[in-house]
Structure formats: structure tokens, C-alpha cells
View 1 (cartoon, rainbow, N blue to C red):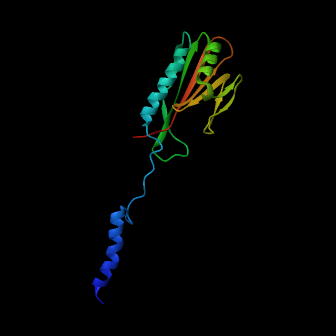
View 2: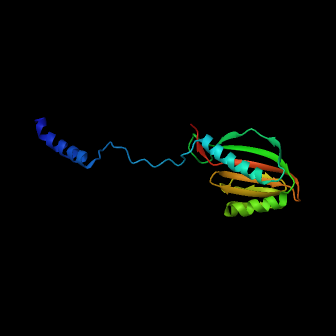
Length: 167
């Protein structure tokens, strides 16, 4: 038997595949990445929002600011993470400022309460809020404000950023 008989049978499908632009070993079309921002870009965006929230409070005085920590994003591939940090500050006009923030963020306000309770985030995670609280969740992250009832006192702002790529 001569191998020349089989050459046309093998060459025709390969030539057609080359003309069409696909081959048996061509990779499938890649999906666009789910997370485009780096974890540091996400942190910077969330920090800007948090700073803006604190700036809304009259006579805000920072008391304590914890260093941010990085955690893996639940249910995501390795290399996808988020930052979590908290800051505590005092202010002289809590009630009206909280109301103003709730109105400003509108539908992004996902939870409010007047007593200590466990707050559930959109992703299903929970965190204990002490006293009254407002949870704001938007594309840059989640912002949990815990504060006493009344006009002045200390506010705890817990920030959980959106997920980003660890590069």
C-alpha cells in the first residue's frame, strides 16, 4: 500500500480548516475577565468613597483607623481578593448626617436598623452591628456605619471593598 493515496484525504480537511480560520487545536474564544481592576485600584476607589462619607459628618474627628487586610473573595478563583478595614470617628450631628447619606445613596442602602443586630451583606456574609446601623452597598464596596442613637457620638465605618485581581 502506498501512502500517497491517503495524503489527499488528510490534506483536504486541513486546507478547508485553514481557509475557514479554525483548526482542531484552536483555542476556544476566551471569556472577558470577570474582574478587571487590581485589588489596589479597588482599594483606592473604596477609600475615596469612605473618605467622602466621613467628610459629610460635621466636626468629624478620627479616633482609630485599623490597617486594611486582604481576604480571598468567597466563591472566586485564587488570585481574586478584597480589602477590609474599619475606622472610628466622632461627630456632632449623627442623625441628620445619616439621614442625608441614606438619601444620597438611595437604593444602595440595603439595611438600616436602630438596635444591635447581625447585618447581612448582599453576598450572604454577616457582621454584628452595635447600635443603630446603615449598610450601603455599591460597585466600589460595602460600607457599614454603626452609631449610637442621638445627635452626637462615635461612628464605626467598616469597609469591605469590591473584589479585585491580585497582581
